[in-house]
Length: 463
Ligand code: UDP
Image (cartoon, rainbow, N blue to C red; front, side, top):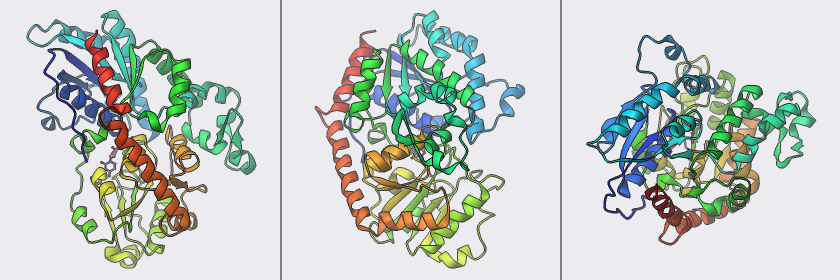
């Protein structure tokens, strides 16, 4: 499954990387760090104590913990760790983190016993880091962990807000289902899901985009052939150098940076299921659903005759610890046909021959992981980039189906049937298999991602 990179002789330069402390951001940043390490760079990771990855999995990296080292500072301890509320932590650190980051970087830059620092690589959402890097004359590269195509949509959030698009109510059904004039591919119901705080999100993305423009370059976890037209538009509007060298997980799996222990017992259960028969259900690390949606999922899965593997992350269901609100008789109805786990080794599950489809929230990592294994998707996006990613999956690439009416049992059964039993599902599988092939070509020697990785290494070496 994993691609090998040419390991170059160490060039005695160091790169400092600073991920956003959430699973979907930590995974690609640590994968990128491994890629750069394989190309000969020394690696220092700056991280918060919140959601710190298992450092013993990275003995070849140096970790420094910053921003929330004071256990008595109540500003951090009270912040929510899941769902949209977790955004408050990002806003807080962007507002108050500059002095501490500058101090830490000064220490790193002054170390005589370590290789000199070539550049800082930060998550795009750490927009405060650009002015800090500028003040130290340190080049800053940005890692954007989502799709390229959601970029112009994010840039349009202030406009959507001014036009009143983001305040539409589900009750006004005809508006809700209509296409957005500026982006006919998207429906109003897609863009209202992006944020519940249009003013705050609009201000945030404006800062993020300005500081991306001011950076020395942008690294995207995608591959050219998947998003060619978006890449062309971007390079016209955005002169900053761009590097599309993904999908990173094809080089290094996400398992080593998993914040929750992955339940590996399910692999032997998957081994006993018929090929392409299992419905894999997971909504990633942050999305939350209501208790009634949780029960609808349970009914939908109980009503189909297929085996399923369902990831229910503790805290995922609002108001519940874990699976207390499962409907009565669920376990009796389902028996050994269904398994519920707290967290799965997702890449291995998707690569398993028994997995037939992925019912996903369309986080960007999950979407890429599904494409790379050629697994058709059922889309239930929750927020931020997910509704846009899901629309591309269902309506542009046509490699999945959208649950248009949200999470309710009849739609769920129909969605699963379309993908797993109907002719439409076979066509979807053919299309996603073609994309899987394109990924492999892009990563092979001479392919677009392979080339872009080399370009990035040359670029960083030129600093
Ligand atoms: N993941 C995992 N086990 C699970 C569910 C998810 O290891 O049970 C990993 C998944 O492989 C992916 C990441 O968690 O790399 C989730 O990232 P994504 O961008 O899809 O969603 P987010 O968590 O940011 O909403």
